[in-house]
Length: 173
Image (cartoon, rainbow, N blue to C red; front, side, top):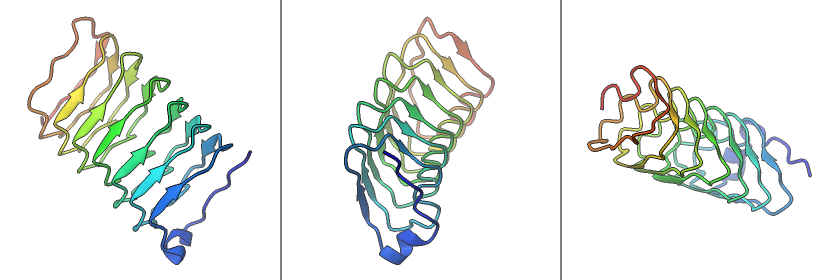
């Protein structure tokens, strides 16, 4: 089933506070909620969801909770960039944390990553200033500037079989 784009401004006009999507939805469109969804604080995504496209919840600054289904396989670039998320649990079918996915989520303090994760891409968690709780998977790649300026990240154990650690991955921590 196709789920179209919620156009810019509609969230403010409707004063949407929470989104609970029903079954049958396969993907959240780009800019689904747009930068103007300043009141959106919670999303509960359906078990049929496989993809969250790039920028879907871009700069939803009051979005503090996102319940991601186990069926989710893909989270696009900048999907939650600049949101107000407090924690995130990445489902096991998601293999990559794409470029800037959680960049600028300054309130994000916990990220639960799983063993099947292959890579955390460039700037994925850049500027997540409150990030202090992080569980790192074993064999994987950590991209350039992935955790740049995560100033609350005080203790981190990198796995022995880390495949690749790119430059400035933990710069400013």
